[in-house]
Length: 205
Ligand SMILES: N[C@@H](CCC(=O)N[C@@H](CS)C(=O)NCC(=O)O)C(=O)O
Image 1: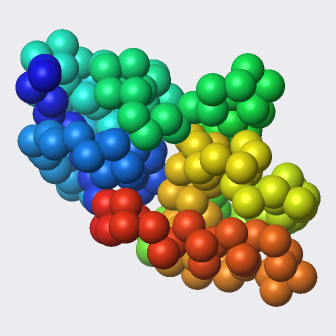
Image 2: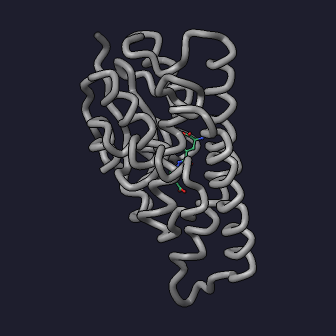
């Protein structure tokens, strides 16, 4: 087994995805905290590891791999059990589709809202932008609720990368941005309770 070092920052969704995937698969790793609040992601040392200056990065026997989706696909290949990408091609495509939508527009709306939510003088929050983000976040919550209609998990009957991407971002929405789930999205609320009861969710912290 390769030596794995995860460059991590505990409260943000992208490295959380990798930690949850490793917990599901029972993979051990060394952890290096890159303090985003202190700007450590822009230090010359870290930029040599990840030139984009973000987390996560997984160093595999010293070779850095970034992009949480690529990291999890690597983990799936070296440690296939339990599967986090469904076996059947259609469910697999669905899992990837959902993961990509979440990591794209949903994550962007959360990050933009978060930047304004945390703005402290002399920075000013842009309330118009925050309202637009809130609408976008509410739309994504409703979309997830619809995907869960008649399904136990987002991609179908198996827990997958789609659930991992969703829980990390939904948890960030609730805990960090203080935007609760709307009770009218009952499928999403039930899914949230079920997913949070999984032992691997201790890796969110
Ligand atoms: N597409 C990347 C996104 C990585 C990303 O945006 N990471 C954020 C934390 S969730 C980050 O490191 N931000 C650093 C910064 O904003 O300076 C992935 O999935 O790994």
